[in-house]
Image (tube, rainbow, N blue to C red; front, side):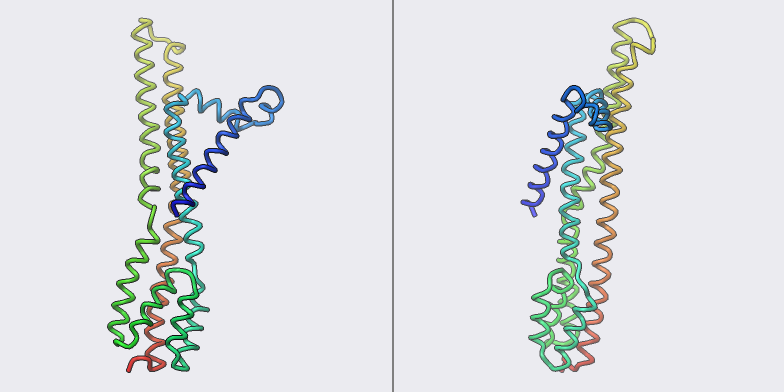
Length: 243
């Protein structure tokens, strides 16, 4: 997973750098860039050194989000098909065959069912206990990385608000040095303040959308895990696996 995050981070940085290089060109190339040119303009006007921290939050947050989405899509299992195969093996008394089906299937649901089948000889209580214990482990693996996404969602607007404060401080310093209050004097400072806030909020909104999608995906997988676990115990009891 670390390799995937590292690859996505490098890719994002390369894409960002490449976009800025295109935007830096003169003539028709810069005109064709359109909205990206405007984006770069506001990014620099917001204080590119400080705004880079917001950009890093966006890149890292997206890297974690993409990694989670890929992992969760791989972890998604067709539980109906899996349970049908397990039921078919248990009908013939082939517990080992049912375990092999689980071993050959990707995803946390198959892993939990495997642990339940592995404890079939110890009775239904042992099966349920094994499913609950191993289910907690799989839940932790599914939620891996969410804490970092939450961190970047919280930090991005904070950095934006910090830029707002810094911009306002700069504006008041100019007022103090000039000795008069006029729109021209404070315009730059206020512009920096507003731009940093906007970029911070945009970053947080983008990551929040991905975060909610990931959480809903995890909830869907967990619900399927719970349904499959209950079904497994019923199927084992129906086929007289418990003796």
